[in-house]
Image 1 (cartoon, rainbow, N blue to C red):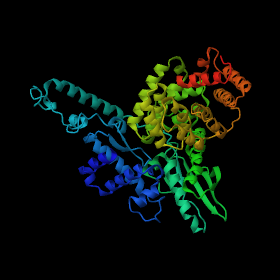
Image 2: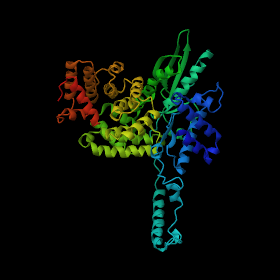
Image 3: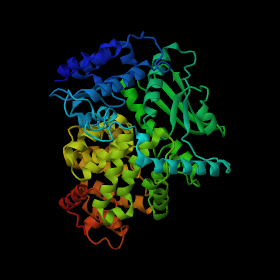
Length: 560
């Protein structure tokens, strides 16, 4: 079916005019059918599909990413005018080289409905609409219609008065805290030319994947600041790296400097395996540690923005702090700042996505889950319209769809979320725990991905990983989950006690599981009478709560 749709698409005028995009689409479809597309990286695509030489520098040559962006936009432009064949629309998720085929409303949710392939789109109909032939007003220009003249005069007078008023007032500067910049400095390989290939792979991976998080704006090198940056004066961080090769190993040294303060704020040492896939696996946990919502830059920036009340980026950081600690004061701050305008276009979808999730996490959601869902899904859908490729936007839709057991939507947006950002420990862990509710076909792969990306900084992830391992009947995976110490905040202590109760039950330690359940129950509000009430304070999805209750009861743990 994808080949049939490909032939139709490539015969269109828009693709006939672009042999480069036509060749790229053919290549990606062939690689998808062969099962190799999920392993492609920008370097391979640039060489195999775009004709770059094998020694080109993928860190400085972004041709693959540019052409992939053009291909996605060209496909979307095609489907604005044309209905798909019986098989569906061809589309590519952001950051992925895998070709998909799906219904038009799922592949391109931003497009207006198209009645059939022969009729113009709704947008075109609106743009070229004319008054009905028999209308008395149809031939009269807008400004000549007599009944509008008084209103036009009044409008002109009002505008003149407003202009006179504002010319007497000096404009006030608006202080906005913009998201910082993370500059990736070219890897230092010393005098070892053999390390060149490894350095290109690492640089390409860092540039591609760190940018999927929205904590900082990522760029290669220390290029000249744009006019907007000169005005905004954002905080700048620099990621330095050095490869050292000896007889047995290749070692990667990483550190991040705060440029303004001229201090190092983070460092790591990694032993780099020669195999590309193992190299990627070694680097994945580092992504979230650097640029994730609970990572080093977010934590450092949260201190800088703690006393700021503007919306946008500082609000995003407040939400991450709330999701980690909860508490009435934090909830009120997040609620207030989420209603403020977002002036940075690249995080508008993210802000709407976290606003959707926040509706399900605030106290009022426990009392009326349906109302919280209604508000949340409205924000989540708006987030997809603003930025269909945003990881948080897609994650919000997936999360809320599992709540209502809307399984077709949940499965689609789980896939879209993990394509948008496969390295987020929060996304992979939470969705791995929810995926069995809707029999997500790649649930096992999702759990493996979550274990690979897990972070000790995200306490709730341990609970979701345990739930996923239990629901998939893969109890051996529990041994791969990081151990944790008792957290300081009450909310995270609840998560910790519940997690330890489930781990003990999975190992047949009934008395220990019962003891941890009692500790968990003691941390819940007094009005929480039943086990389901107690769990609702940390688990929103009813199906997940029932699965926990059933599992503990089957393990012989008495809960109330």
